[in-house]
Structure formats: structure tokens, C-alpha cells
Image (tube, rainbow, N blue to C red):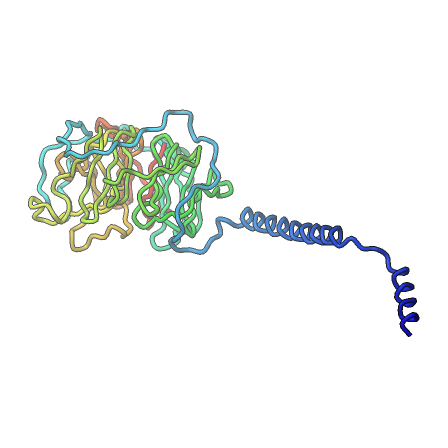
Amino acid sequence: MTDRLRESLRELADTVEPVDLYDRAIRHSRRIARREATVGTGAALTALGLLAGGLWQLPAGESKQPPYALRSLPPATAQPIPRLPPVATQQASPPTRHGPFSTSAVPRHKTRPAASPAATPTSRSLADLPGHVFYQQTGSEPDVRRLSPADAAVETVLRKAPSPVGISPDGKDIAYAAGGTLLVERAGGTPEPLATGVRTAAQAPTWSPDGGRLLIETSTPMVLEVGSGTLTPLAAMYAGGRQFRWSGNGSALVYATSRCALKVSADGLESTVPVLGDTHADNPDGLAACRPTSVDATGGRVTVPLRNIGEASADAPGAADAVVNTVTGEVVPLPVAGSVVGALFDPAGNLLVRARHGPTTLSVFTPEGKLLVQATEPAELNGLELLAYTR
């Protein structure tokens, strides 16, 4: 019995081939690695396709993600980019600035100071109005429209803007945010994503005078270099600021505080515009300037929606309807007839004033105060809000 068992085992051993378990394990491991690599590559390609195909179609609302820059665009201009005002620790002495209109004191009323006598324009033809004028509908998700005065053409350049927008100084590019992603449309092309984590309630995207930078708000005010995609935070002293605006020469920043006062940062110093805001003892009428909208070439004048403290809101929309002297805090009388419903400086310091006196008129003053053009605005723009005045 024992001999038969031994013989059977010898026959079985002769039919079994030797097996190298180490080589088998290596081959099995390599097959698993190839499958995982294939799956990983497919997932990565799928993710990239989703990103490229719909990055700007993000849900509305402010992003809670940390800010970071995305791919950069070609530089918008070859001109030097204006430097940011450096950190200042002392109050600036009021600088001596000249402006286009009288700087003599005017009564501070809850409405507006009486206008100066109407000036006589050099031209009354809309075709002579320099630059382009941008408008937007009131309410949420407004359409943005552009008036080209040369041929009185009105064109819709952005439909249903998902946030406050910024128009570049040359009038060709539009910046806005969707779902916390900053987008730039260049000449009506496909929106280009530039940065994430962007908020717009306290800071609409604001272009530098040469179009090379954008002032934006994330967890803190930031400057985005459009060409390189570099994000640089403003100094800590600006942390409570709102609605920053560059002067036309890029040397000054004007911005609002949470108490609806205005501040100017220039030449390394910071100063508070007198009178305006709820903390000034010399503001008996409670005038407030919560939202600077444009600044002249030097920083000596700023356009604002002028309000009373009780009705003011830094987040409320509204076109600028007054010009304020940043040295004295006085409201500057404007030599136009009717009610001012819009006022904006272009980067060169020319002032566009929109007024209603019967038909709505557009008036452009040079930095020296000369009235270049006063013309009737196309009727199809009635009911829209003045947004930007560009070259």
C-alpha cells in the first residue's frame, strides 16, 4: 500500500511543471498599474474638458474658495503700469490741485448746490462727442450697452451681466465675475477666466488707466496684473476700503470707507476728504459719498452718487450725480441746465455730464472747464444708467 502511494506521487510530480511565483507576481502587478494609469489619464482628460468647456458658466454667488490667479492673457498695453501708492502712516497735508470749475465754497444742501450759469458749447452735434459712453439697465443682471457718438449707434455689448462690471479705458474690454471667477471679454470674444475667489459687492472690477491692471476684491483688496496673472494684495491700511478708483494719471487712489466718507492716497500719504461721511462735525446736512465712480486726472475731483446718511448704502446701485472736490469736500457746481443724472471722468480728465432738462443731454468739459460738446442723447437710452466714459 505504501509502495503504491509512493509510485502515484512520483507520477504526479512528473506531470507538474515548475512555477516561478515571483515572476507571476511581478506580471500581475504590472497589469494592475497599466489599468490604473489608463483610468487616471481618462479622468484627467475628462476634468480638463469640463474646465475648458464651461469654466465661466459657474453658479452665481460669492466664492468662498481662497483666491488664486488662473491663466494669464497677453499684456493689454506696452505702457508702464502705474505704481500703487505705498503704505502711509501719516496724514497728508491737503495738496494744491486745480480743477475745471470754481472751488469757491457753496452751500451744503441736502439736494445739490445751485448750478453755475449754463456754458456755451463749441458744438451741439453728438458726432463731435469724443470717446464712447456705456450704459446699463437698472436692477439685477442688466444688459450693458455702448453709445458710439460718431454715428449715434447703440450696441449691446454684454447681456445679463452677472455682477457689477468694469469697462477698460479704451472701451474694448469688459471685466466681471461669475460664481467668484473673474472674467474678461475682449472685443466681444470668449470670456477669459483670470482669477478665482473674487467678490464684487464692495469692489467692482476696476481698470488701471493704461488697462494693465485690475483692482478687485477677494478676502482683501487686490491688484491683478492682466498680462502675468500676478495677484498682489493692497497694503493693510486699505483693508476697510471700498470701491477703489484710480486717478487718470495712476498716481492716486480714491476710495470710500464703511461710514461713507472718502479717502485719497497719493504720493505716499493718505488724507480724508473733509465734510462727507457720518463722523464729520462740519457735515450738518449729513452728506454721504459711499461709492466713488470715477476720478479726474490728478485725484482732485471725484464723481459720486451724493446721498444723505440716512438713505446711503455702499452697496446700492446708482449713477454718480455730483462732483466733489477732494481737497475741500465741497460739491462742485456744474454749468448745465436741468437735473444731473450722471457724471463721469475719462482717464484724461474730461468730464461727461448727463442732465435732464426736457430731452436728456450729454455735455463734455475739458480738464480746464471748456464745454466742448453738448448734444441730445438718443431716446432709446432713456431709463438706462450711466456706467462708463472711455476713450
